Length: 126
Image (cartoon, rainbow, N blue to C red; front, side):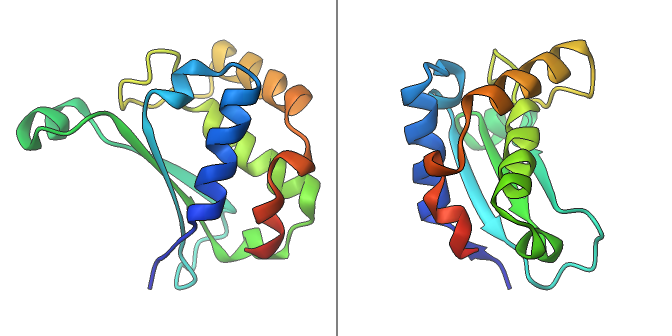
């Protein structure tokens, strides 16, 4: 079923610290690989909504789900996919997700300028 990718999670934390992305450091971000998915999507992100945070006493969190087509991508495309999902995390890091609006695309482009394949060595092993 799902396989947790702790190395990718650590790469995300290191990149967030290196580039001063404090909003990504203040929340839990888990990365899972789902080999059973039949989706044509490469990856998707899930946010832990406020109602679940309150009901279960949890902090804001996000799950990046990597899907089988992700494994077929080269390093640069994998990096773009991860940057795309991380751009959905708003500056408030509240558990909500940012839609594909102007702020999303601005953040996504900035991540593409910042991130390099060397920042995410574990992506080559997915």
